[in-house]
Image 1 (spheres, rainbow, N blue to C red):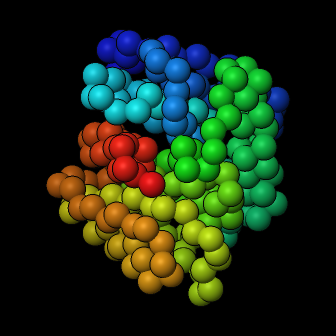
Image 2: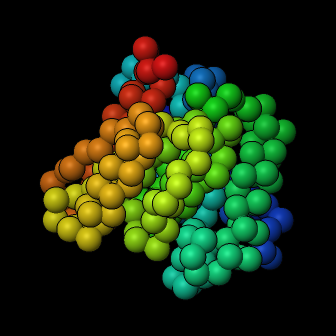
Amino acid sequence: MSSSIKGKLITETLDYDGGREVTVYIPIDPPTAVVFAGDGQLISQWGSELEATGLPSTMIVGTHRLEDETRRLEEYSPVFNEARFVAHEKFFVEEVRQWVRSRFGVALPPERTAVYGVSASGEFSLAMGLRHPDIFGVVFCASPGAGYRPPAAMPSPLPRAYLVAGTQEEFFLQNASRWAVSLRDAGADVVMTERSGSHGGAFWRTELPLMVAWAFGQGAW
C-alpha cells in the first residue's frame, strides 16, 4: 500500500481522548485541495491512487478510528452517543483543521475541501457535510451505514455529494441510494455510483480519483 506512494505520509498524535493519531498524505506538489477523512489509517494510504493522474494536487488528512467498534460507531454516528459524537466532531472540525493549518500551512476554502468516509465513517462524512457546509463543501461517501439517516428537513446550504456503493452489499447500497435521493430532492449536486463489489471492496479506494476529479477538476464549480 504505502510503499508505492511517491508523496509523504506523516503520522502524529494529537491530544484528544488520551492521544489520537492522524496520518497525512502530502502530495509531491503543493496541495490545491484537501480531503479530511475518518477511518484515517485506511484512507490516508490511498494517496497513491491520485498520483500520476493529472488530477489537482490533493492532501488527505486521516484521523484514525478506534479499534473498539462500539466506540467507533459512537464517534461516527450521532444517534448512538450524542456526547461522544459531539466531542469527536469538535476534535475533527476544529482541532485537526487547526493542526493542519499550523503544521502544514494548508487552509483551503469549502469548495476545495472535502470530507470522506467509508461504512460508519461514511455516515460521519455525511453528518459533517450537513452540519458544516461552510467548511466541507464536498462529501465523499462510500457504503454508508444506516444509523444516521437523512433528516426530514434538510439544512441549507447543502454540500455537493459523491456517493458510491457495491452491487453485492444490498444493505449499504440502499443506504447510499436513500441519501442520494434525499440530497438530490433537496437541491444538492449529487453523484450516485454503483460498482461491482461487496462491503470493503477495492472500489472504496479506486473511486477516490473519480471523486477528486468530479469535485476539484477543471470546471467542477
